Length: 160
Picture 1 (tube, rainbow, N blue to C red):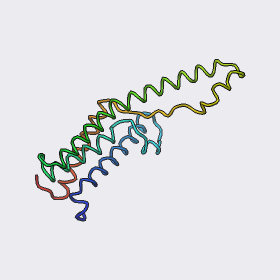
Picture 2: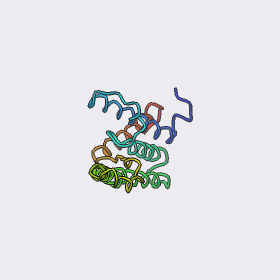
Picture 3: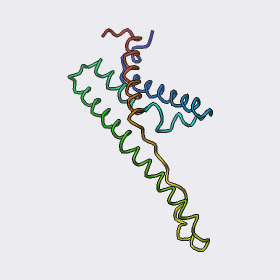
Picture 4: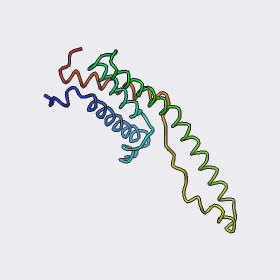
C-alpha cells in the first residue's frame, strides 16, 4: 500500500491535513463567490482553518503513535492550543484593526488637498490584512485534522 515513511509519519499526516483544508477552502470560495481563486490556496483565513487542521492532525497522529502520556503528545497538544488560540483570537483582531486603519487612511487622504498630500507620501499602500479565523472555522479545521489522522492511519493498516 503506502511506503513505510508515509504510513505512520505524523508530519505527513499534518501536511496532508493542511493540503486538504486549503483545497476545501478554495472550493468554499468557488461555491460561495462563484469564482475560482487559485491564490486562495496559499492565503490565511477562511473555512476551514488550515492551521487548526495541521496542528490537530499532528497532535492526533502523535497521540495515536506515542500515547496520550508521552512528552511528544504534550508538546504537540500545547502547540495546537497556541496556534488555534492565535488563529481565532489575535490574528482575527489584528485583521479587523488593519481593515479599520485602511478605511481611516482612505478617508483621510481623500479629503486632503494636493498640497497637503505630501504629508502622507510615506504611506505608499494600505496595510496588509492578515485574516484570522472565527471559532467556527477553527473548530472545523481541528475536526478535519483529527479525522484525517484517524482516516490516514486506518488506511495504513494501523490498529486502534
